[in-house]
Length: 348
Image (cartoon, rainbow, N blue to C red; front, side, top):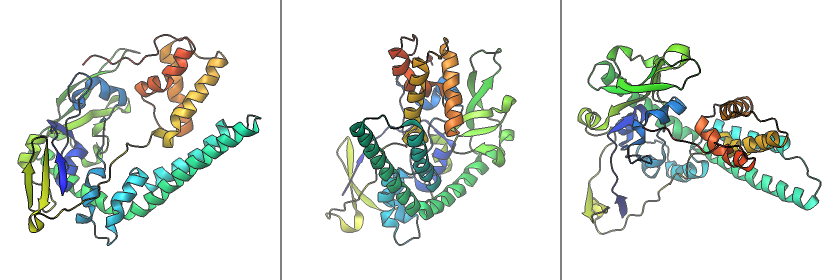
């Protein structure tokens, strides 16, 4: 027996969300922001990241992955997905190496044997957990390669529909802004002529390159209802089920074995790993606590966010959105009496 909970379907979906519908039958669900609107329509949130706010994972299909995979041991896919948080081998290995590097750099001996031993034990526990994630990531690597290929096929079908005008898309177009002024943009219809396969950044849902090397279109989306009219059912074969409707949920049984309980182990995503393998926030807070004590923090908040972004990019080799910097550093700044540290959301 399987229980399905009702969910509100999103009006629009990012490009890879559309591809996952075509390939696996994964439905994009409504994602409310603090005002009750779908987050996909929040221009300011997208401008903060310059990309789509979410990219689909394989967690939703983990319990039925055997229907897509040719490997005999695909039954272990769900367990390994959960234990690895869906990371690639490179991501998991980078997290292990980063854990060791940051431990050496930011956790020198304090001179207290008991305290030093506790920190060493904590480091070893965290390292062991990361190494287990790496083992699971290595175990599912061949499965992910097969699923990635199915997504590529779905992307090609979606791209063909967009180029041929069978499916319309919209995205956020950046608008000219004054020097040092806030970035602005607005949703607009993406012309068919703008679609080039080499210009599509699928996981980011971005398209093309405009001025200052910024994306030409950000957070490209299609109407899910129009997508369903074009692709009424995904590539996966269907199976007959008996559904019992209890209002807030549906209980399903296999048609061939009605009355028998069919228990399906479900992998649940415990959330994507934090940036830097979970250590980025720790390193950033320690570094800026040091700067605050040394009284070398800039007076302006914008300069602090810029320094935080520069530190993360230099240390971790990845960007740091301003909203993330605000969230991570808020306790440090408030502790040191720096006003205005609370993140503010721009109005829709």
